[in-house]
Image (cartoon, rainbow, N blue to C red; front, side, top):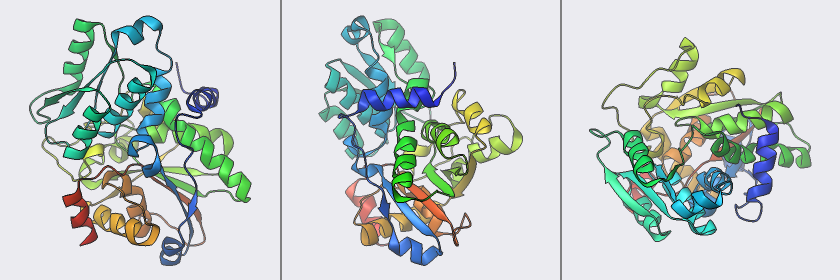
Amino acid sequence: MSLTLADIEKAAERIRGLAVRTPLIEARAASAATGGRIFIKPEVLQRTGSFKFRGAMNRLAQLTADERKRGVVAFSSGNHAQGVAAAAQQIGTRATIIMPADAPRLKIANTRNYGAEVILYDRQKEDRVAIGKKLAADHGLTLVPPFDDYAVMAGQGTIGLELAEDAKALGITFDAVLAPCSGGGLTSGIATALAALSPATKVHAVEPAAFDDLARSLKSGERLANAPGASSICDALMVDKPGELTFPILQKTKTGALAVTDDEALRAMAHAFYELKLVTEPSGATSLAAVLTGKLETKGKTIAVVLSGGNVDADLFKRALAA
């Protein structure tokens, strides 16, 4: 199998009326600061507060009647957790979610509020994939990965469809689209859609500096892991290595990779709040941080930035506003 534009178009039909078609907002302050024309795709306004609902809803919408009866299991630091829990609630199936014990309290609480059973684990000592596979095997549950699944990627790729449609309506072509990246599901989906609909647009994945596995992997031509024990305030982007299914797509679409520091992400959160009146989490703000800090040439360019999520604890948000 692979991921195609047709898969993404079918996903758009499945989630229509369920997922929010988020707007495209021109960011005048960011444009003035960078010399480019910057647009924001605010997935912080999506159901569950992040883009993850798109992929989860597309995947769960394709469950068989028997699979719905048995339920699903997923592992996530929080945004995929909430997306799967909300999608499961939407179709009336049971969700079990494996989350790190140090995940933001807000994300754990929200996942439970959508009706999911939450199982906490130690991300430094335990393997969430192994836990998920065992639960799936023991209880007949359908495993819904956070990124290494074509249906999940197709759902995330609907963002790329919307970007292409909105650009056409405005009579513009994006020189670049930037999106936060962990395992690569979001960027794989967007890159696949834009490769077909706007081939002149370059897609860039943006990672935390301590988790730049995609950048190093693309350079070497093979999937490389991050250093054991690495940490970041970008909790949603702390994966071991690029996905097995996503990496070939990112190679094929010639997706770029940039990295930002935690402090740069915090300052981008403050910018989003003061200038755009949008609440973002550190992970969701990495793409904006890359633009604001000049990680990419922006002068005279038309650029779209995906703010991927806004599920942030109050204490961390206060820290960002003081950055």
